[in-house]
Length: 251
Image: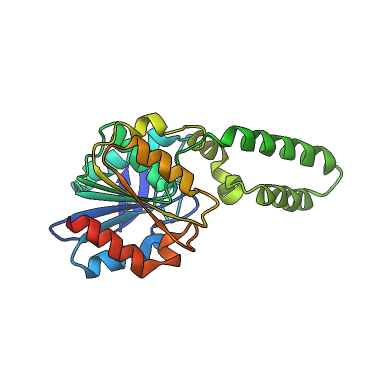
């Protein structure tokens, strides 16, 4: 389905039931990436709302560079537009960061919050960003004499080697920079929802240490660490994940 929110065409999927759950996907992903969770919760009798955040999937790009605040405000406007207030919000990776930001600002007030491999801890980004800038600068200097198409390929290789998501969406570079510049440790302390943190012990993008910081920051939260699971928990252990989510929602 499509809806216009703040002059942006937004794509979303909806299955209605008494208890509504909203899904927020990660950077470079879309609502399709969380289809396993959508279908799993629908089969269990929950209503599920899943959208392509601005800049991803079939939704329009933001008209300016957005940070977590803008995404949080957008989620608020989107929910007001479709007149749904979910009792639970599930965020994966950057979707988790948006959920934390929106919750800390009082824009969403779910009873339950599930953060799967949530991003938002940026303490290790300072060194990483310096590395990114150095590699980019060096690469630019070394490849000036090469054709533009070749320079692009080498630039992408550089970023891939240092693990940056910057080029996953090249048209959202400035938005990416704003999103990853904000650490949510202090904002997490303002979250009042009953919170479950789920991380994979093999996750290199958002490691277990991030979850521990959030667990210490969000009062009353608890963390579940899944063995031999990477960043995409819902793809590595879909059945286990759905079981844990439903168990938490039913408490």
